Structures are given as C-alpha cells and as structure tokens.
Length: 554
Image (cartoon, rainbow, N blue to C red; front, side, top):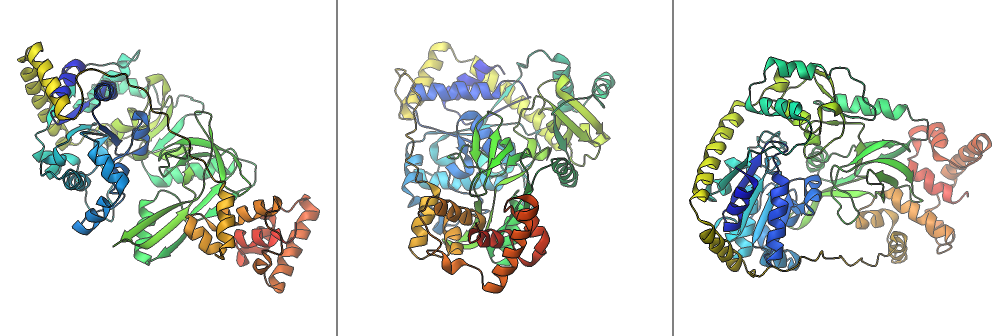
C-alpha cells in the first residue's frame, strides 16, 4: 500500500494498524495524519508505548496518557478513582482519535486495559469508547518484556484488537536513502530468506573500526561488563548513588526488577549514560542518551544530552499502590551507564553507528532489531553473529503474510471509491469527530513556562515545618543525599545557620572520628573531598553521614 492510500483510509475514520519495514514511511504518514486532524480541529491523543518513541512524535507514553501507569490490572474502584482526575477526564473528553506508536512493545493485557479505560471515560461500549484508534509499529520487533514471570502476548492477541475491525495498511514503498544493499539485507531477513551473497555482505562488516559507536549486546551481563570496563578508564572521582526503598519486601523486589536503574550507581565526569525514566517536564525520557558533564551543588549529576542541552537529573521514585496507598517505593537517580546497551533497549532508536555483537543471540528477531537500528551499512560494525541471530519467528512470519493479504484487500476496496465519495466520507468523519471542514492554520501551542520555585527553597520550607531530613526526602521523592546538598546550599546562602541544624550534628564520638579523617585527608589533598574519607573509614559510615558531618567542619 502507498502512503497516499493509507492516508485515505485513515481519513475515512477506520481503526487502522499501520505497518511496514524500516524506511517505509510509517512515521511520515502518522505525522501527515496528525497535522490533517489538527488543521480540522479534531482532538487527537498522540502516544507511544515508549518514551523515546513518544518524543519523536511530540507526544507522551500511552501509560501516562491513559492513566494506567505500570499497573497489571484495573478494577472498577481504580477506574472510578481515575475518573475523579479532572486532567484525565478533560483529556478523554476532547480526544476523538487515539494514536499509539511502537505497538509491538505494548502487550495484549495493557491494550485491553486501555480499551477498558477508554470505554469508561467516553461512556460508550464501542471499542476504545468510539474513538478512532490508530496503531502503528512492526511486529518483527522484539515482543514486550515479561513482568513478574508472567508470559506476555503481543497486542494483536488482545480482545481489543479482535473487536476493533482494524484495517491493515502495510506500506510497501521504500524511502531509505542511499543504501539499497543494506535495505535489501533487512528486507530479506524480514522475509525469512537471507541469500548467501547478503550474508557475505554482512561478513564485510566484521571487525571494521568505528569510533564512538554505541555497543549493542544481547545479554545484560555483557552490557554491564563493558560499561564497568569503560568507567574504570576515566581518571576522576567516583560518585556513588545508592537506591533507597521501603515497603513490603516482595513488592520492593518487583519494583527493582521492573526498574532499569541499578541499586548502586557509580558515575564519573565523562561517563556515558542513559535515562531510565520519563520526565517530559525536565526534558528527558526513558532512552535519552548523554554524558555526565558535572555534578551540581546538591550532588546531582548534570547530563549533557546529544542535542547539547544540559539537564540536572534528580532522584526519581517508582511506586506500587494498592487502594490508593503506597505499598512499596524505591528511589534512585534515574540513570545507568550506556557505552553499551541491550538490543531490547535499543528499540525505537536510530543510530548513526553501532558495534553489534550477535554471537550470543538467543531470541528470534534479535538480529533484525539490532541491525535495523543503524541507518547505513557504513555505520555498522559486527563483532559476530550466530545462526539464530538472522532468523525470524515462524508465527510472526505467518501473521505478517496475513497482514499483507488484509492490506491488499483494503487497498482494493479503497480503489473502488471515487474521489468525490472519498471526500464526502472524509468530511463526514471530521464532523462526527467534532471538527470543522474548513482547514484552520495549525499554530504551535507555546507552553507557558511555570514559575519554578528553586528546589532548595522547597526543602527550606519543609525543614522549617519541622520535618526531618528523611521525611523531606520521602515527601519530595528524592534521595537523602540530595536533601543534604540542599542544606549545604542554604547554609552557603546564609538562609540557615549552623545553630538551626545543630540537632543534626553527629554524636561526639562519631564526629571526632569523622573530623579526624577529614583533617588527615585535607593534609594530603588540600580539600574536604568525600572519597578518601570514605575509603579510610570503610562501611562504618555512609556517604550521606560523612557529608552531613562535613557541614560542621567547613
């Protein structure tokens, strides 16, 4: 199907699954349709299953948009509570078209949950509450990651998919530029039949030299080993960030497994990192890559992302709620080292260059996913690949053949409709969706910048309310060390005096021991840096305790 044919089907108002190989123009068609809807005043929800895919479209994650978060199920009580959220209610009332990109990474359970929420908010029993739903993606990508040892199924196994009378728009044109050979390799892997001459072409990329390439591995252990090795090469002080937690032990463990932030995060200036949580307001999403530029006065890392912007990354919190109460919570700086990343985590990224090791591939489709992250053959270095790396799941191949047949049928049907009738159908859908026939100029909405209260001022106010440092950290969902950093800033600005925080001074025995270690370190290094003191005192005191004691020395 061509892009124009797909747009015609979309404009009629059908529920659609838009698919095609890498470079077929899926994102282009989505953006064209989004602009069309906006120009006619139709409310559209722009979402994706991952943060990085959502930013490509100027949208948000479907989990956030629909209010489902990381929940595995929703009962009537929870949906009723969601409906009390005015922001969420207004969002659903003004939306008539819902777009979900990267559908391959959304499992069947969550698509059914989204369908259930839409029906409730829209007060209609039709699929997705009567909204047009546009799903976009490629099921040759890896399936959603299983959670809590549950087997997950792809979205097309859901009741919501089966009941939505989805039209298939399978784009067949190729819009990748200047690399026909690489496109041929990807398409042949996708078809499940890679010719020997194309395997030979891949072999030419074994062992080539590429500078600053992102390394992709199939196993977490290889990723961790490479990142630790690269970090050790940097000659600078190490900053350690330790995850804090509270709640039921089994729920804490579940949070730790689902959260990509490590329990113990080691960082240095110059370290390559990746954000592991979405924070659209702060300017980063899950998958944003950058380099540690520095650390602010509170000890938080300052990341220079690849656009050149510098972002302060403060501690983030992951929670599990039941009946409106927090049952478990973990807090950590939402970063991990990223000289190397897993193939699974690379989905949705487009890389100029990548060093890929497929020699330990264990899942069908891993090779296709990894190779299709790279824009050109010249940007590819292969460390190795095994037989399974270039194989595709037979079930996915069978479903793909079915999609192509359904797409061909949809194409034949749209060809039978004359232009005048098509235009009438387009207009009818616009009107039933609350839009207007006459196109309006789409003016980008400038978000008003919120007046941001300095973060130290918020801590200052809570401190004067009588909250302990631990209570402030919990209330603000920050790591304890960040709050200690705020105290240091407030003292420096003379908003607090040592007298105000005298109750935080360690007992005499501990303070004398710590003070002695700092004075000894000062003679060697000429300053009150923490790392030598921590090394001297070992595990007796945490970095935060040393930092708090240091306040009374400087």
